[in-house]
Amino acid sequence: MKLFLRGALVLILAAFISEIAEFLINMILARELGEGGMGQYMTVLPLIFLIMMLASFELPVSISKLVAEKEEIYHQRMLRDVVNMTIVLSAALFLLAAALIPVVPVFQSYHPLLKWMLLGLIPLMSFSSIARGYFMGRQQMGKIAAANLLRRLVQLLLLASVYQFFEFERSTALLVAFFTLAASELVVFMYLVYFFIISYQNMKHFPRESMGKKVIRRNLLAISGPTTALRIFHSLTHAAQPFLIKAAIIHAGLPVEIANGQFGLLAGVAMTIGFFPAFIAHSFMVVLIPTVAKHHAVGEFEKLQKTLQHVLLLTLFYGVPAVAVVYFFAEPLTSLFVHSDNAAYFLQLLWPYFLLHFFVIPLQAYLIGLGLIKDAFYHTVWATIVSFGTIYLLGSRPEWQMSGVIVGMNAGAVLMTLMHYLTVCKKIGLVWTTKPSSRNI
Image 1 (cartoon, rainbow, N blue to C red):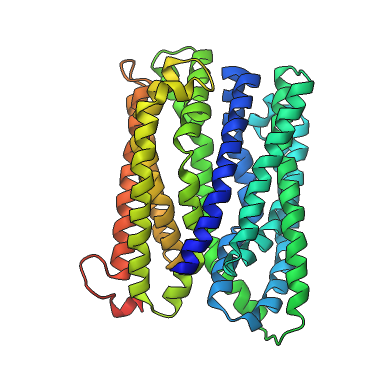
Image 2: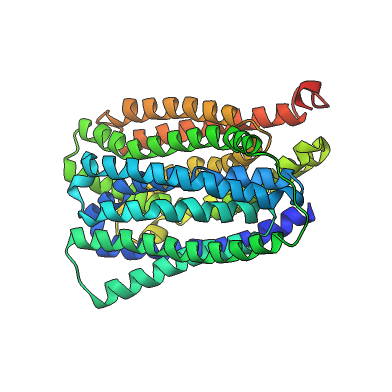
């Protein structure tokens, strides 16, 4: 538990600074791009994150779990085989993306150089993911924290510098915003790969054994396969959500330009403010996956139960005050970005969505660590169906509009939280039984 708390604390401190930097980044973008430009930025950003996620192959999750479960003598040859496998997968994805991205309609309204930037991100994400997964599995959270901090600080400094000294038209300003994101990923890549090479060279001086390429591939795919499917579904739904929301409120009677602006306020302002404390939940997630995997591998269910209780209590202690601040100070907080009553109203309505996601994130880490990735996927599918259905049903009504959209988002969050929590508790013996069943062991 001490190792978990120490690792989480390091990540939380670094993530806090990173979130402040991201807060400032979105403030700069909101002022430079305006409501319409911010809407365009937030519309295509989920698609960019989808490509970045595919390029990572969920290796941070699968490698961290495998490294945590296996002895050190297996690490060197295991990582060598992972690198070889990643070269093949990365090359295949690069060729596929090079063929598909130019014909995707949504990118036609953006600067042509954006497509080349996306292709360049693929190898960066693939190989930095190997290093990230290894350091997570080894509980070297200082390197992970530093990498996360570098990403935001580099992006903030580049944005502030470029926008300070130059003026651009909207399309070019959007391209600059995306290229600063890519530059920050390049810095993270160089940092992580540098320390990974050092660690890899040091492994050669110690005894080592091989698990076999087929065993490694099977173990990695058993984790990466379902986790990637989960992330793909999550990314696709987030990529589709902007179009669904705008279609719903346009059907309710709003003009296209106003609908685009309202979505920009929702995604670029309200969501940015409300999810500010989520860095704590994501820090828990990074530490929890290898911790839970290790305890589960040796059958330490009592430790799993205590860790879950501590994490949920800590989430309650920071989550409730966070959403209270968001609710009661919505107007001054949103005025830091734009002067809009709608932004403050959206932020207040979303408080259940924010609070429940603070719990969902560590609960999902538990599901992954326990090997219940398929359960996490099914929960996400059902919650999304309920959320999207409610969003369109209520959002397309003239008397509801964006209020109905937010009710749908809150409904999906409630369902997902309940399903995650009950599944985890049943697996580790906190619900219905006092001890985990023999099939769990």
